[in-house]
Length: 508
Image (cartoon, rainbow, N blue to C red):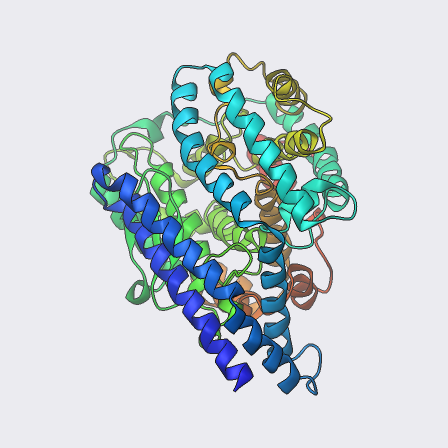
């Protein structure tokens, strides 16, 4: 009774979170502008109901009973692991006072409006009070959650459980050591031409081709759909309804194509989770209160970056699929061969905006944000000092002089919504993608499939080693099981070094 009752209780939490996700999808794709204020309240209500249902006396009573019923099972059994995750999530939420949760929610709602106006006017002073309150509230959150070494560790827990500043710094150092010299060498070379990508590409044809490639990679449109939005995202309401979105620029075709491939990777992680885990802790983020099955944000990002970059931006992929793209856009791509196209979509050009950065420079944008967030949280950096510190990091990592705060410290929405500690998952995802792709290609059928535009073996390998497990294992356990070692950046560095050395004619 206890264990089965607990699973049904968690299933109800998942139902609430799926309902919240459905309203969120609608708000970002279909909802008329006038619905924004009431929709925010609806989302907040469902979030509160899900949390209250999780930490309720009834859920805790069932958890106590369940733990007694299954105490004889091995510690790593499905049943005991599920119960341990529920216990961990309840403990997490009970550490944070309700009034602090409410203050953060109110701050996020107010902060995004202030940020949008401040960014439009390049007015950092107008946004600074929001930042002061955001980081003060997050310091309070960290103190409530608890930590051993650094308060930032407590904030990363929600997004990347087990990650710490102490473990991130060696990872970042390895990436800087491997990639900064590469970036400097590339800066001395002539860049590939991209002018032909800036011609008018019909929107309907862009979407049609992008969806065709998503299906080819393994995205199941019987359990999903593609829609337009301002900022692309993937969202799921169990594995049987997993939706992806993209945005279209009729004069910059790569935006819709690679945005779609990116979200396809996220979508397949959800679609190919073990069906037995539906509505259980293994398909529900009970700490973050999201209806998702990925073990961490970084693990989820590994799948999006793998299918977008390691597959979708590879020479091999376009040698096999460029003919179809050319047939779709014969006028726009007239006289452009596959080599020219492949080089163009992999052009390296350091820039100020994270979401517009290329594959090589992206992680530098992440590193500077993590460095600055951690310093703001531990008090070694003040909000008043932040713009100068930001600009100095951009100069150090990318060699650029930031001309204004709009292109610098005001560019991200994250801080205005109260989110601190989430940026690291993007780089962790990149590193995991390199490691997993390297391991998958050791399997004969995977390499043979990639050489024939048959992506089923790769998707099946990822399903076997990543997707199907949902939240069954920790990130490190997942990597150990799949690759025989923990997070290792050398494969990612080698991927970038090899590809860009070929594109830019560098000596390996």
